[in-house]
Image (cartoon, rainbow, N blue to C red):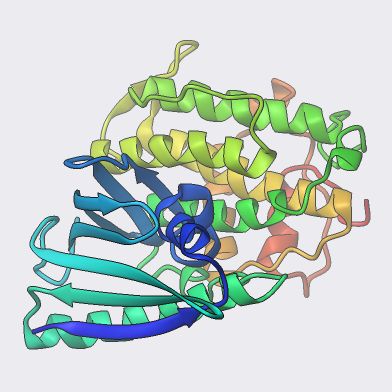
Length: 326
């Protein structure tokens, strides 16, 4: 069966092509993270929602006009990467661009599921192209079901990137709730952590300090989490300074992404919106990860008191030694 839908975008064809192919644009409306090798035969892997990864190869590329790529999922729906084909054509018109998406090679169940998905994301694409505020956070990425160490980290990444998009050069020297770090220093700390963990996992974590903070962190987090998903959570990981259980390293990744998202948000006066499903999971990981020995090393301050009515995000932040009223 085939899914076939046409929409209108109020932007030129080149801009429309960028929205459907460039990782930084894709993250605004369709993906949490994305790897794109935009050439014939090149591969892509998109974390569409936490725990759900689409993958395939590019078959045809005509910039500003047409792109064809195979499509499937790393797990679920019995549709392996490369098992179906998506064709997107772009036609300029007087008010922008007409986009037609055709997804072929699906059975009835797959077609119904993908129709729901494509309708959701094409609506978000229209919003991204039409509104100065863009598509905004994707509710489908908020609460992984089921949740595990990796999907929790992917959900935390989505939250973090939403905050980092709001950072401006004027925020660079602002003090953050994280020890004595400025915003810039905290960003460098986060980048360093992702590079260290990614390298330990064998990921390609080359860094470009010239990128904006959101793009820079995304470019490091995506290969790190992809490598973690391939490796799994069994055994230990050589971190250079010690062999740590993979589950502990995954806990560290979750804390780096979500707690620092709170740090950045607090610094710039942005409300951090996170599902309780995610904060409950990361709070449990924090209890297992932040031992008295870890606190004694200076990595975390003593846990701070919280009200009995505090939610899991507040409990998590206080457990890491931060003062909620900063």
